[in-house]
Image (cartoon, rainbow, N blue to C red; front, side, top):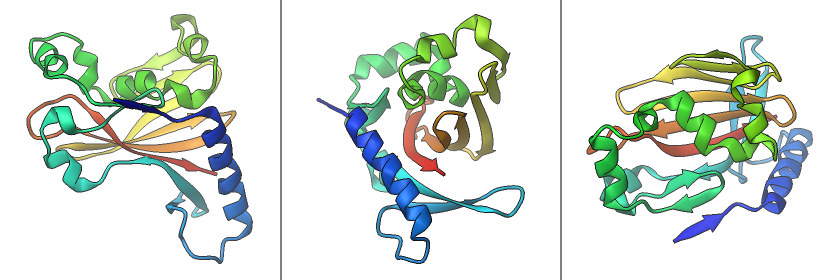
Length: 178
C-alpha cells in the first residue's frame, strides 16, 4: 500500500505557507509551527507529513515509512536485512534524509547529491556546492531532528525516530518553514 504526495499538493502547501505569513494573527489551524532562528526571528512552518506517537507502538510492518513522497509499509524482510548488516545507512539521519527526502528538493535530486557536488559529508552534516545542507540539530535516544535547507524552496525541519525493535530510522515529521 502506498500514497504519493503529488507535486500539486506541494505547490498548494507552499502557497499556504506564504499566505500564512501574511495572516500571522490568525489561529494555528493548518498545522503551523514556529521556529526561532539564531537572530530571534520566528519562522512559520506548515506540517507536510506527520506520524502520531502511538503509531510507533505498532509492529514495524504497520508503521508508515516515508520514501520520496510515498508512504509505504515495509515487509519484515526489510528490517531483517538491516539487522544482518545490509544497508547500515538506514540508521544514519543525514543519509536517510538525503535518500528518503530527495523529492523535497525538486527534480534534480540525483545531480544535487552527485559525489562531484558534495562539499562535506559526515554522519552529522552534508553540504553541497549548490547550497543544500542537511544537518543534525538535536538528538535523543530514539529521535533525531534534522535541518534540511534547500535554497530554491526553504528550510525543512525533519524529525526521525527508530522504534524500540529496530535501529532503522523512520521519518516521523516534515515541516516546511518560510
